Length: 536
Figure 1 (tube, rainbow, N blue to C red):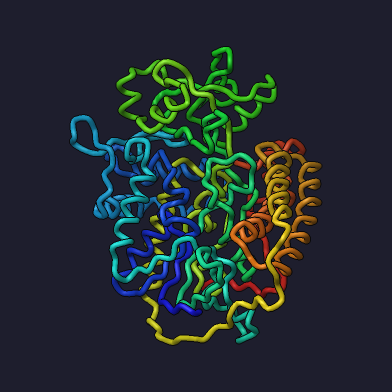
Figure 2: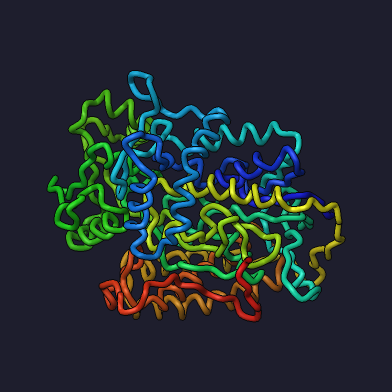
């Protein structure tokens, strides 16, 4: 079965939804979601969106804060472009119906401050900003007549002219998609295809991300011939709730921004030992400090204490966190919150230009799956949804300038003639568990050359096993995600091996300092057997 559409968008977070809405008045959109439409990282984002909205703030201050957090690897042109388009995208969200938290006197919007920011510039919807953004945009997408939604569909691979052996260049024609309800693979043909699939933090054993964050877009783009960059820079959020029943529950950075103090089990504050900014240091510094103290003391967690603030303030500012912790027997108005670091954000990804274009013609990538140059070696808090919005806007403008084509190409169907149903799903579950464990142990917050070599040896074996399994059995959702995670893990490991220094989120005991003997450069990986040309 072949579907024909103008724009194929794979992913339903802030990037995918906002792009769909910006294009739907003039284009037919097919929107692909692995689960229900809203189930992605955006839904769980608590803090908000960074933008220059206060007269006392400035574009230049936001730019400089971002450059400082990125540890010398940000593309200043991209940073400035993103920041300059921040306010208009916030107003676009407000026009969509998103209700951000207002000041107590109701004269404007309340802005909070997070790590790395020199000003209060985070606009938020209490402590559930992602939910407000995701659900509002989802409602508008569901009610638009030109947007067709395909939930419970897993993208398998992109269809390109290179793979079909046609033409001299490499052009994306669409994708193969697994319909999980009917367990069949369908063909989607599109004039333009957009990857908005999010990050890859599920490659680690402990993560703040939902189960959908398996690096699908990055892996598919790599197999299609796209460069990827900076995969070694994986951000670990310093503060996830530590409780046996609290899977992936994040404690927003805004808790520290509003005065929360990190303490050892005996109540001693410790952040000033590591950075003069204490709790407001960038996330990589805070995460390494917590990791250091946990290993030094042999303790399972540290504590984040906001209980010195008035209970009414805590309940008003952090109602979601207050209620969720209460469910686990923790009253944050009178006791500290047990927290641990967890994998949170993928700073690297598919290389794109400032219009979201990848190396493959008619293939775009936006949001966390893309590498734009905004984040460099470390993402500053709440710049992520900002990037989603700004580059969805940029991609939409570029697509709208293209001459609309009505050409329909009959693409080859999915070939299952030589595969069977698997009777050994244990292979998938075992490899899934092994991959995430060795990535956490060997390629985590603190790395060494020896650990990375061990990880590379193991991932090479897994890639061979998974490739053999993939070639012999019918695809399943779990197999597709494992296949993609293994590719992403290999990219992360290779990039980490290549960087012989510590910078930003990449910290190695064998090379503990930045190496400025040469100009800092992003870690670009090139797919084999592809002639890469930079987009004009």
